[in-house]
Length: 360
Image (tube, rainbow, N blue to C red; front, side):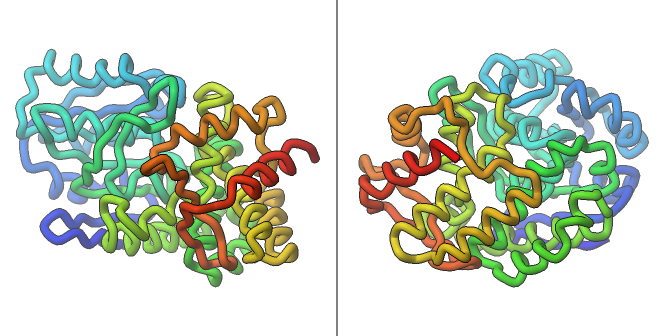
């Protein structure tokens, strides 16, 4: 097992990465201060892993609430189901919420923990690659609104993150590839050596080789932990983690939640960000091609859906959380491994990128 720490003073917490951690009773117990535990999962993950987790919770008064699986259920109505279960079980503010699932379960459980009785303890047990390398770390929690993704939420840190690499063996191919998009992101924004490593090890990652995946998770989480420790509430450098996300969220919202997986939308978004960076004279065509090559090798989309017109795209991007004082903030690339936050992109160049990406 490998342990990393997210250093946030009194709210610092460990990320445990390793195989078969679900059965490591002592890991969980040290992060559950009270007696009441509510496991929040979904109808895909619960049948696979709830029984494995149960022995670690025997000493507690524990219940579970099983939500429907999918981004389309990351909404207010489904979120309320968690509160119904907590209130029905008469859980008090000494309780712990435990998120067992992918990014949707983690985001919704974290946001419920932030709100229930004004804040209760919570633990992340991410079961997808995307959640293990990105959404479970850093305390961003949210639900979607029909007009925009993750628009309602809170910054709320977990007590620990337990990333069990063994659970990735049941992950379907498409989910694994979607998770790789967020892994590639770290190489692009701040770690060019990691990008090189990904090019060399992609075949093993796609094959689900556990030790290679463990290294990718470790390096991704270390990158994220460093950024979050420096800028917890995204007033500066943390925005780098949004590479490809402004384009990607527009795709997810525009196509209807769940049509494109988050990682797929972000992959296409990162290629668009690379295109725009080239138009600004920062990236050479060789480097744009290299980025596109890696995405294609990971069998990820490199173009947005053609049915989303440039005009609709711009309109959706204007509702993004990263719009401040009417200015759209984008993360672009000065080089592979060197992300930069920009809020004065010439509208003409943005339009050119959108137009250029609407035909192959």
